[in-house]
Figure 1 (cartoon, one colour):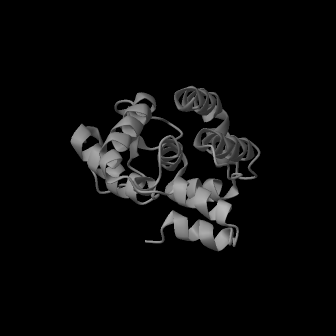
Figure 2 (cartoon, one colour):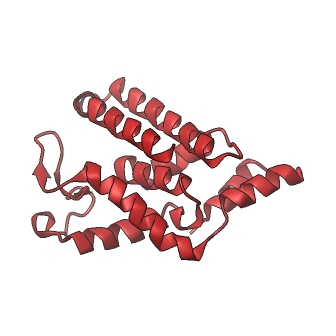
Figure 3 (cartoon, one colour):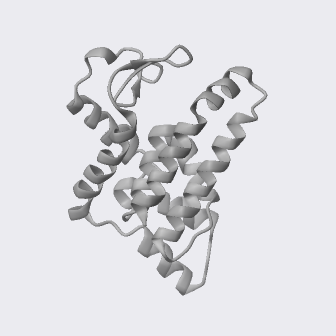
Length: 182
């Protein structure tokens, strides 16, 4: 797995010691905080993902885990513990959140769940770095909003329709995320 810090060092190579300090600070690993941060982030995300649903424009979902992403999983009978295990492995660890400090780990994790790990990492790279993690986290959220707005204008009618139906919920979630990181 390519660690996010390594990606940043490739994207933003710097001989500036102050910049290196800030990048190191953003990506310091605090093992003792990893479980706490994961639990806090998961609590936030599960507030928005909820229980079992089957939407006409989307696939079957429970706790935010979709049949489209996990076709061999019995979504209707998915347990909360199974969902937590999936979130830990396929979203939290896969997006490098175990290496990020709070609140940036929350922002990246929630975006990974809602838009996918690859998209989340793209938005993280696009966001303007700031030594203040709350500001940097907000910059990532701003990129997420731009991504959602782009989906509403998609040339693909299916993507556009789903985005139009989901947009107000996405914005409510983003606004709640902004309040949570403040």
